[in-house]
Image (cartoon, helix red, strand yellow):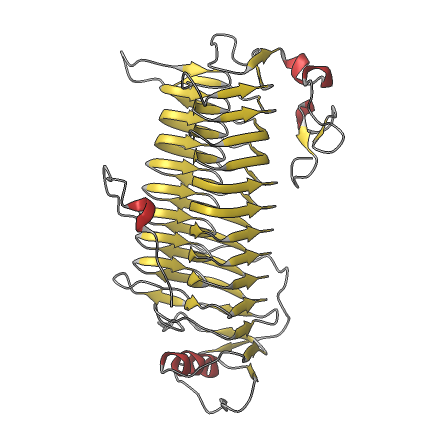
Length: 455
């Protein structure tokens, strides 16, 4: 049975405003795992005659058979221990699709796309939860080697391109198109608890209200590895390029190039992070009202060996890497090089720091926004503000003071552009395994050796 602990975090938040979003669009297919061959077009009919309960493996080659799978599962047929494979690319013709499974018990078998795609999935149920090609993937189930392309998924809560929720394992799969809903909305999966997602991606337009992410809406005790997202992600609260909201989770070796638009707690990679993030990066621009960051909006966990390059624009608490680094949170071996602009607590690396930051740097410009006469402007080259007393520590970290010659910083040490490109500046930094330095890489600033795209 599926458990939904979303209220553990969401109940504490009183939303200041509710936005309504509309979305449309499609993504570009990257033929990383796609098979060759023509597609089977659906005429709306259903075929279940292929199913034999005594068998363990089935190959589906027509849209009618695929629709039959949905009917069989939704009527109670058990697929635990059984494997369903695609034998051909299938076109569902954007005829309204009935998602596979239900909110209480999802698909329990193995669905192997076998490198083929399903084209034109259309789900338009704005008042229903657990919406996607699959409503959900249950413990012991698996989805792999599957592409869902040129598709549109709309629901209420727990809405994803491939699955509304994932309690198990998704690998080598992708979605292109648009996903829309209210809460826990993701390009691939809406609610990942406590599932694993690896070697997968989504591209397109993702829109919702709360916990909206380019790949996953809410990653609760889940794991994401070697995955990415591209496109546009928009919403109200907890909005992230890869994941909107994370709790007790792990994300590694992943990236996002998505543009992010949020009201509160928005980030180029994750909107609200309460877990571990490592060896990852984001490059998309981030715009929001409060607590926004180029990589993470607000951090309650640990972030290491990661970077951001996108521009950040927010009214209050805006940072090139993280908007707000909370009490007990830690960040080490990270950097940001994007431009940051705002009014209050605006920093090149962090908007406001209440936690620990070490061995990090920022090399972007920081500026105040024009147009609000009489507004107090608080800017910092590295940190736009810092909590006084126990808990707030910024050590062995730097910012390019030539790019920010008119402002000071609430932490971090200002260096000239030339000094920022010299290894001697970074005492006790590991340049043998963690960091690299070359005049031809990253404009001469230090780069992370383990992060793809940093070089």
